[in-house]
Amino acid sequence: DGGITQSPKYLFRKEGQNVTLSCEQNLNHDAMYWYRQDPGQGLRLIYYSQIVNDFQKGDIAEGYSVSREKKESFPLTVTSAQKNPTAFYLCASRHRPGLAGGPLGELFFGEGSRLTVL
Amino acid sequence: DQQVKQNSPSLSVQEGRISILNCDYTNSMFDYFLWYKKYPAEGPTFLISISSIKDKNEDGRFTVFLNKSAKHLSLHIVPSQPGDSAVYFCAAARQGAQKLVFGQGTRLTINP
Picture (cartoon, each protein chain N blue to C red):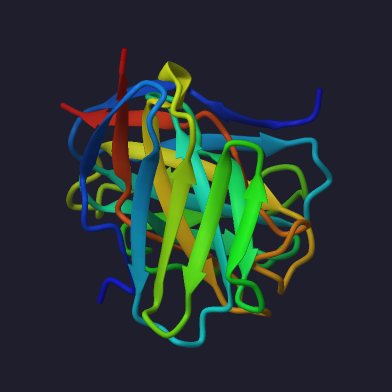
């Protein structure tokens, strides 16, 4: 079945450590996104990528880094520079770069990764 | 600046009654709106959408209404069922833009 796979589902990290969250999709989607969910703040965009080898900062990119070496993969690294990394992280993908809405443009989300900094 | 706002963090509705979830936006350039449903520890799933050329879109028990002059949209669920208990996010976009802007979410609880 096609879908988006995020791993790990739960992750604990010590302060000062970098950690990488995996996101893989087999939907043949061009665009991929990373969102962060915090209580009472909805979903905030961290980074997004419309095509391979290209990505852009979202609204809260500080302390994060990404790569897009393959169409199927969009890993997110939470660096030690991220001041408050404990959150639920969601990866998403969609068809058709440049069109954020529409029946072909809706986002498909993975099940999320919960990161806790100890 | 919160461009998409869901001012009710939570809503409790009796099973079988109508649930109405509200969403306001400030950016008049938004012309496409979506609702997503999210269960705990899972990713959101697409529920229903509406283009700014319409004022209503219906899909089974779910209807979304758009009032462009008030910059307000609402999601109606009727009749409400226990499986509808979840967090609902509204989102908005401009045609050709690269991203969706999400509201804070409303937690809907359907009581038996």
